[in-house]
Length: 75
Image (cartoon, rainbow, N blue to C red; front, side, top):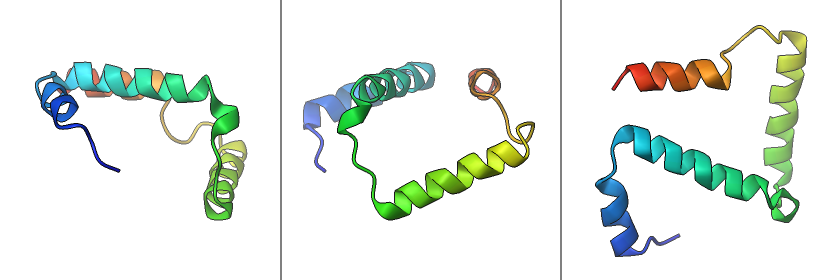
């Protein structure tokens, strides 16, 4: 996948927090059209594995809010 050179330069000029927000916005735009996303069998298997692991111990790991706070405080 190639990136338009202008876009790459503009992204490199963003702060880390702005890049994180951009990634979140991009992900949200994908979720809005998730019915168009095709997963390979291996990807589906990995997602199922992670979901099962979460169901076994929902307290393991960190919430997205906690991760965002950690990332924000490391800048």
